[in-house]
Length: 280
Length: 357
Image 1 (cartoon, rainbow over the protein chains, first blue to last red):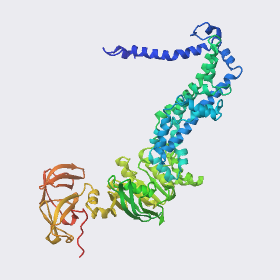
Image 2: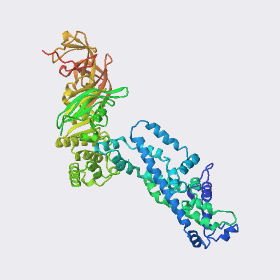
Image 3: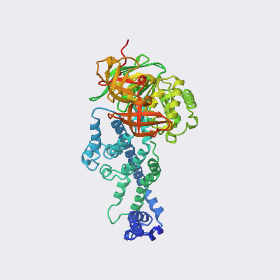
Image 4: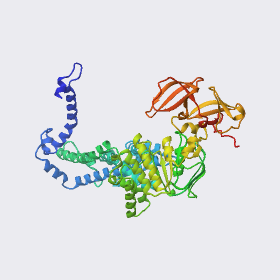
């Protein structure tokens, strides 16, 4: 790079400018996370004084121990995990099946079905939140796990993505499978699912994070402690400005960060594999 | 081994008719090559036999059993696809075994058949590889293997050699023919390549715009094409066509280019002056002291032979194939040996044979 910089021609931007911009960007992204991490290692008084510590303190283990005492945070973590996993798997299951039907079967109203599914993409939970809440409350599902999860599953966000992928599966596979005697279900299990592996992995990452970060819907439906998620619990911890234990909020925040990071890191290998190694 | 019989197969896609009633009877163990330009309906015909398309009219019978309404899996046939359609996530072994597994064969039997086919096709060392780790020729063999292990009544080939490079194609062509002979399985082979058609088929079905233009042995088709389309499609370079008129009471033809030629094999029926199309293959033209004067405009040396293209005095194009080096001239005088002439009616393009004595 120093070589390139020394041979910089007039009118060309110098390298240090690009690096400077990049460093600034990194700093902007990293700083809040750093503040959270550091805040979780100090006692309540430090943050209470209005300091924003940028160096690690010695109270980290104690903060996390205090957070887990009473089991409430453990349950919130469990609820969040359950919700994120159920939403991710539920959405993938529904989307892949509906995309399979739309792409590989010819039935009356096929295009209509696809467009109906496609239109729901434009209606996120926030837009249809009142009717959805009405339905959920009429079904008596308020403050239940089912009420928390099902309305978020019931949108075929990933259908379009699976459809586009299925359209790239050559017709010959379908025909070869027909000649081999595979019925629709076998074709789905033996050919389509294995071929979609990497797509499923990528979608899982996106949907897990989507489910984990849900805020508005759990805020409405999870009225009791039994079903509240970590994100909601964290907000509830910030009661009033005066008696908020900021160090604990920071620690909860670290907890809330970890699973999405873990999922992204773990699935990244699959993700990259899926992008680099085309099996067609 | 089985017989195949197609009766009056028609197919329309919406308002477009792609097959206009095709009949075909295939004997046990016979290899029929369906050949034609793209869009002639040859692939559609094959897919109808496979059961991947259903005909608009007509019946498909395998071993006298009407299978027209049956699913592909119930017809007991195997198909080799143009791009092989090997399942990318399965090993060679799994690819070959998949059809048997679905049909509920015992594990030992599946293994025996796969091992047998692998030995036959020299695939044994590759059984645990994935398709993408194989070369084109190897994939081609796996596709064959997948068809063979099924021990079907019928093999269907949908241009299986067209994705291979030229050298490999020639090699696989010979291999495929030997294999088919050895297994004795009744086969349909679709191709647009006339060399493949000539070398592979016991009989050829030349298709033209959804019709069966001619069904005969390769040499019959080459020597006695049924119409000008077949005549121009089979043979390379393509047959020359010259305009002429029936003359001398049907015993001769007066070429538009000048000469009057007597038919070697007897007079043709028809009115005096009826327009004819005369066909002569480039290799049958011989340089002579007198005859048609050809002004050369293109010379293609091919090593063992040369193809010369030129125009006659009246503007008609003519190609000549001569052995050896191309002559260093720009004009040639050519004679048309009467015995090699093909006579067609100009209006219909149909072959015009001598009237029976």
